[in-house]
Image (cartoon, rainbow, N blue to C red):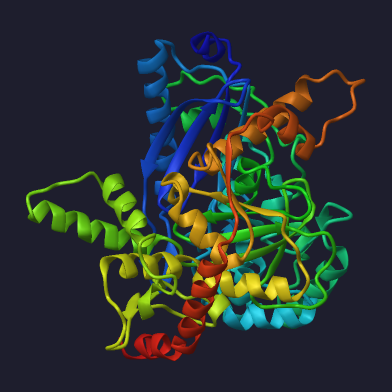
Amino acid sequence: MSADIIASGRASLGIEFGSTRIKACLIGEDHEVLAVGIHDWENDFVDGLWTYPSASIEAGARAAYADLASTVNDTYGVALTKLRAVAVSAMMHGYLPLDGDGELLVPFRTWRNTNTQEAAAALTEVLGVNIPLRWSVAHLGQAVLNGEDHLQDIATFTTLAGLVHRKLTGSSVLGIGDASGMFPCDADTRDYDEPRLARADAWFAEHGFTTPLRDLLPPVAVAGADAGALTEEGAAWLDPTGQLQSGAPAAPAEGDAGTGMVATDAVAPRTGNVSVGTSVFAMVVLEAALPSVHHEIDLVTTPSGDAVAMVHCNNGASELAAWAGLLGRFADAMGAPAAADDVFATLLRAAMDGEADAGGVLAYNQLSGEPVLGLEAGRPMVLRTPGSRLTLANFARAQLHGVFASLAVGMRVLAADGVRIDTLQGHGGLFRTSGPAQSVLAAAVNAPVAVMATAGEGGAWGAAVLAAYRAAQVEAPVSDDAEDLAGYLTRAVFADAATTVVDPDPELVAGYTAYLTRYEAALPAERAAVGSL
């Protein structure tokens, strides 16, 4: 059956460019995963900026797809030649300016960079909405303030997902969720905010840059809309063996936040999700506009264009993973080698035996700057007093608490503004180990946290679901009423989804609150470490 679905071109493909992994995911008409392909990559710190080499974008996409095609062949005995639909997802924000031929003018500047403080602050004041350091318009603004030479040749700028979508389809259209991390979007018009575009144009003109932003920003599309199709050149770019055929309709390219929302059925008001990887962020779909501007909160949209409050933290589970790696090497040295996933799971389970406040142990996971906490740079650090109770369990709990600490600070801002959440969906590899991360997150945000059986599938699966949704719009009879994304997810994707919900434990909430109070009080030590190391 699966072989027939693949051979007949009824499988949909999603490709996501994460911060450490590029993943290709192939799903059938029932949205079940048929095969995946993976390629690991890492960002580089070059000339003071976090980046990925341009060549590695193409090489990584091809490697992930080749791994997928090989898995399909080995598992089902068929070649992957035709697709029902395709979609791209990637790390949001950042800056990729292109010339008239579509060539990059400067290396990709990722979301991780925090060099845009001056422009972000100025644009926040001008536009009356928080413009985070990582947003594309902040990067463009900083380039203008810096007088960078490449600006004379810029024809457009986009995100990583937008760039790859353009390679595959020849179209520069961008999904509204990803576009809303380039420039503020209007949830009513489902497009860039026109009054704010005018104010931004005036600010740019005052600084000598007169090209209207509308001429530079990619056109916006909502989920399910026409975003082009896989071209012959795009198929060859992804699969240089020549087996992949062109013609598959493409969903609008989305950011990893948008595909995370899709992958967790969190696109309706009072729902939200928390995605944990190299970064950690929460997306909460709003019932009403926030009453004030907060530097901790980004205002973005769902892939359908509904307003979302986003708490984005640059630092997620990387430091926890580094400690798991160290303990794994210690096990090797003891003559008791263990698989990396087993070491990680053991560390998470140990955390559950720790004291609710981690026994006075603090763990700072900042490998880079953290705007939510006002940190321009980071230094990973474990901090304790002589009276702290340093045990493996408390150490592990402190590290797990640290993963969510910056997020908890931002979520408290939303709670103070009256934002209510029925359930948050946990999403990402950290939730593959049942229990620990879910219960700590529930304590950190003081809200129920649900984890679906598909939580570990990630944004590549969410992208594949968006591809299938686009295919459903193409294949539906013209006379039928279009089914919105929320309805499609509820009916076709998650109707029978197995879900585990953990309510916040009052004792753990109190323990996490005590931890966070000490954590914030000791932030000057983190800043001192940045200044001296």
